[in-house]
Length: 164
Image (cartoon, one colour):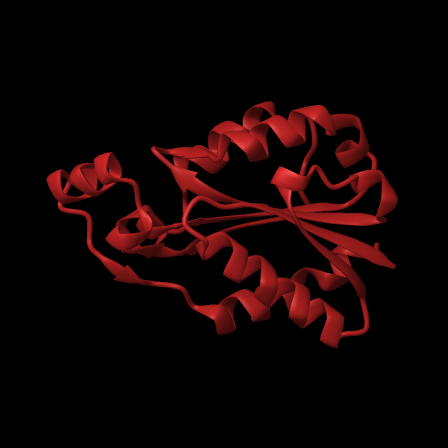
């Protein structure tokens, strides 16, 4: 069984989550291809897909949306799981919900077998100057909020859903 773990990232946090998922599935005996969406990986070459995207300004990365649109038919024909990564996902008031994920799913054209919104990081040094100013203005909490053991646990949890 070949699983494509395709991701779009802005500051690198989503890539670290995708790497954790790929490593976990590989340890379970799955054949995994890890690919940045910027390289336009072919989902048709795999039996299942895990799509990961950073969230910026309450939306998935534009490249992730464009890639999913381009490959909509292929994604609709196989098991797909979706994860997002954002600093705001660490906010307990969000209760695991993410507006950007909800908007994407409403227009995706496929229904994922699993969806998870993971906390990422808000590290100013990894952001453009205008984004730093916005984060300061919004008083966004800064730091690394990733929980890689939770990401690995999710990968183990969804593995049977991808082979169904």
